[in-house]
Length: 146
Image (cartoon, rainbow, N blue to C red; front, side, top):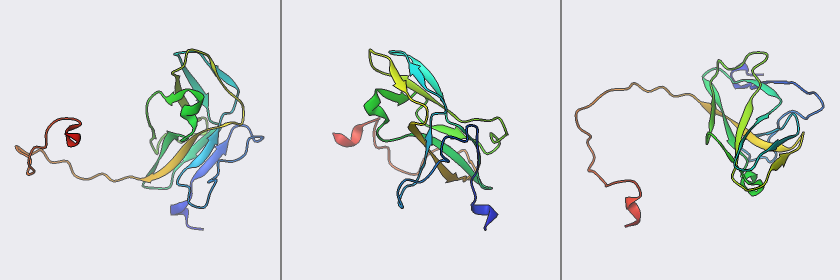
């Protein structure tokens, strides 16, 4: 087995299944809530995801919402979570911060698939300051629709 292509996962609650790719073409591993929680209306809740993860060398894990999570009335509060490679200790359980955008509490049940983790290769290109950019100015934010 190629050690350079292994995501190591520790589960905190062994009754909850190991994260898995749910289809042959899936890019993300579905992760589940370790406990049932209720996120108050217009509030933020932190969902423990039952895993500590160590990405392969040269990679990081990206935490994103499942495409159906908005149907529950939830958005990831920070948009996307970047889990740096050094956030991989024995007690470094991943958590998802969700904002409830509804006027009623939203429940998440223990074992519910609530997020995905995606393994991403790290690229660290050299940063160089320039006095001027080479391309023509296009305009401001959202100008391609004009």
